[in-house]
Amino acid sequence: MKTSIRIKYMMRCFSLVSVAFLALLVSCQKTSELDIPSYISIDTIRLEVTSEQGTAYNKIVDAWVYTDNDLEGAFELPAKFPVLKSGASEIRILPGIKLNGIAETRAAYPFFNPIVVPVTLKHENVTNINNLKTTYNIKTVFAWIEDFENPNITLDTTINSDVKIVRVGDPALSSILPGESNHWAAKVSINNDSSYFECVSHNDYKFTNNGDIESSVFMELNYKTNCKFTVGLIAYGSQTLRKPVLVINPSSSWNKIYINFTPTILANSNATKFKVYFTAQKAENGPDAEILFDNIKLLHF
Image (cartoon, rainbow, N blue to C red; front, side, top):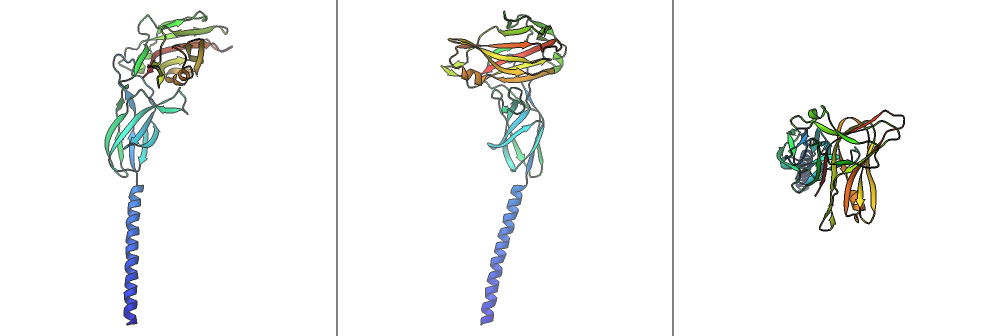
């Protein structure tokens, strides 16, 4: 009798241990599957524009990636990165830039449309998402576009300036983005240490919507320079104030920068209108200064 009870008790314990082991095994298998990543690869993102939106030349350097509305992160392009998902997913990609040209301040550019791509992710497999393109948001207002292809340029040298801004041809421009009519730029030459350069946008601009300050105001600029120069805003109101926004460092080749005017405009909310200005001065005992500007775009919503 005692032996029978002992056998039944042992069988029951064995069954409980077996069930617990199987449950643990299944749990480990599930956890293991969840821990196996799928991979996404993105090469580049190009910009497609209409004839009214200026150049398609851009400096999209990052992809801000969401899978099914979950942020995976911001990845410098080209990128390959793991995601802990599999199966059918919707990938949403926001084109990213360097704010004010600074590598440490990166953000999704508010004027570019997100790119949505349906994919099927597989564990340990790479899903390639290539040949992506974005466009400007339909709500983007192009307040000012200057590509210097027209002889009547929209930058004025001020009475404070010792040198003038001139329109010049630059063969290097046509190689930046083949297929575009992009042959002319603005040039400033400063030969004397004491010489000062200053120019302003010909027109002034208002950045309010029904009395509210616009949420995003940026200026895009292509430039090539062997000296530093400053970009700023002149705020007109009860007082006229000059507000430097950014000092741009030398670049021996054509570069693209996205300048964020929004904080300066918000800080001067009493201003009724603004102009953009550029200033520069030759470094003492340095080489003759040469600055070239092209493809200016002033954007807001």
